[in-house]
Image (cartoon, rainbow, N blue to C red):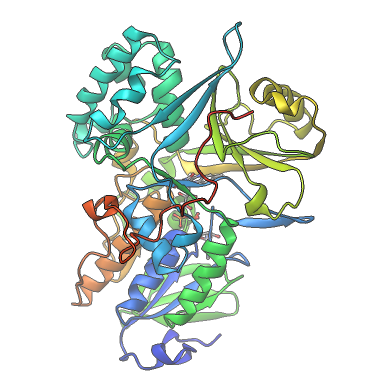
Length: 504
Ligand SMILES: Cc1cc2nc3c(=O)[nH]c(=O)nc-3n(C[C@H](O)[C@H](O)[C@H](O)COP(=O)(O)OP(=O)(O)OC[C@H]3O[C@@H](n4cnc5c(N)ncnc54)[C@H](O)[C@@H]3O)c2cc1C
């Protein structure tokens, strides 16, 4: 590596760029990759520095014997327009398609009479009627609870997530004040909320919850259709991302941990990595909030100590390989069990026989440090209750992945702690899912923060540009024809992704 980002960029496209427009992006998670791509696409000469030997940050894969394992199951929704733009930009949309229509099997094992299957799905009707039939027939709620859920959803729709007064209130208190029973919270609000917000309703800012439920369930009929990668996450966030960065002329340096960022005497920026210092015009810090706090020069934020007040929340994934197929659906959600969501990872992991399930356990404070043996003892019998076919099946492998700081904690009051993309230091920008995107800690939030930082930098360079992505557009719902097959992120016919009534 050389000492200045400008003359050293390898790709021809970068070499053509005018001098005086270089930037260093620190951190190669989704926020940093996005910022690097968006800036490079606008003609800025970019160096991306990542401390680890791979890109992708918190959403990555690793090898375990013959398996490719994701550190944690990731899903996104059709309303995640920024992440969908990102998938398109790296050429990965076809590898992480969306359901044609929201359809979530929900299995309740709490009742003595046995397990019961319900479904949360949508119809092709306008909001809020698109969920009306599903709610009316949802067997896990009493009739009275279903009516009260409908009324609360309409009240939620009237909230403005950007209203600062909502940030300090907790979602659980709001739900109780709107007549929601403990059962309704468990069987509906937390079923969705824990997975998307990484906290139970009582621990969640009303602003963030309103954002999730309004955008996902109450904005457009298809907004909550679920998408997920049919390949290892690393294929997208590391492999394809690296190819896209290289094609855009970005110089990417892995295993390169930034030690400090400071202003030079001439008003440029000095980025220190082991053995050398890079000089550049602008810096995007796309690292987690604690690292950002450590790298921010004095005076860059009014109250930098607030970054350290942002809490974190863990996610545990439990991976089980059976010698046979035990689940005949791509995923399911569970009630009446410590199991939350179960995903079939068989194909994506490269497993050739048997079935590989990943249990995604959000807000996992109670289990995150439990020994593997204790988790095995607790969760295998739970899987037998949920999926009877596991009872005669042999467990070929059982392991866990623990992300203790998977997301920032969406606690009441977190909104006032999250800074925007701009700092008080000219040329220094912040990105990361923890910045003030209005979204909880998601891939969507990370990508939005990356484009936000790039936009702020481009405006300062006098090169503002149009929006890269919009809200959920009507065009997302058009009927595909032979001439116009529709957006690439659709599940192809016959792909086997549709859910069947019988899960096993
Ligand atoms: C188990 C799990 C499950 C999840 N499930 C979902 C889901 O289903 N849907 C969803 O949308 N989101 C999910 N998320 C959240 C999502 O993964 C994150 O919000 C997103 O990936 C954060 O991206 P980021 O770029 O903001 O930060 P990060 O991914 O944390 O990236 C920051 C990068 O900076 C690098 N870095 C740090 N310090 C330095 C330094 N000094 N020098 C150089 N590099 C440095 C780090 O190595 C890292 O690569 C999940 C997260 C986890 C952990």
